[in-house]
Image (cartoon, rainbow, N blue to C red; front, side):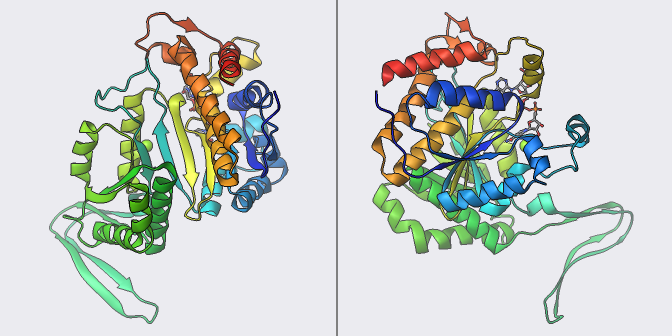
Length: 402
Ligand code: NAP
Ligand code: MG
């Protein structure tokens, strides 16, 4: 069989520990035999980040802006323990944070649904994609503990020194106080990313906040979304037959529970933090969760939602058998290859991405799975695989499909 050709390179961001091991297996067994893979390789493994004073991370994000699509392996975000473990020059920032800041992106997460591992919510037939606005609000708050009686005020001083002042509360005894903010630039870029992603995946978009109570703050979120939609996306949505609507967060929660899934749910920062854990745990496992960073300029970076699976890596180093689930990392590759194929008009590459996903899911559906899925599955005839056996099984299925 002739290998599938690519025209534009994919930005490949390698990573750490067990996921780095799996990364190589996936390339060797599932991609290189079928695709004439073109990548621009960046090693974001912790040693290389240390060696380059983390410049490699910045360069990989800049390459993503240039080419448009990246695939990223999970990476260590160092803490003090990691600094000692690897003898690092300093405690580098989270690569994901650095990349997100450069791409100005929003992260979309969706469970991978597979027969035999059913969501706890029975009506969910299709995945629910959660988009979290990862900027500001309570995550950048300023707080005060109030010790006794006094007046709390909100004061804004503009650049000419003019003050706007509002009383928050007249305290008669001890209490607590909090100030928070967001910017229209950030809200607007979040809205753009959500609309772009809805178009690119042909799914409806829901956005919810609490504008009945927070009339100005949440009201601004609602209005920015509506304005961006009316001015730039309404016609495109209608042409694709998808819809956008805004509703109250409590109404959204009730509707989500009764829905069939298959839409994007855009959430403010706190709602997204809470609701993404609800959706992912109702669907089973982080190892069955895809994650894609979408910039408002339509640049995409695909990854798995889980970390580097450190505990399994230490077992691997001792020569012990591991049973690490590679599905989310495989889907990062398939997502990136499919997007590259779509952008470059390469049908064969898109078809290959579809086949790779199908082969992965049908492997689980036929009862072959890693340990983490055994407790979740409703299938009877199960074969527990180690990391490599599972990948070999997928490779066999893929060969048959192609
Ligand atoms: P983790 O890698 O998400 O793993 C936590 C536990 O979840 C594992 O020990 C394992 O449970 C289970 N698990 C996660 N992914 C799995 C998979 N694919 N297959 C089977 N089981 C899986 O988190 P961590 O071990 O606490 O963190 C390790 C490193 O990852 C940290 O240095 C952190 O900074 C980094 N991290 C990176 C990212 C990213 O790059 N996007 C995200 C999160 C964390 P059992 O041990 O019970 O089998
Ligand atoms: Mg959380």
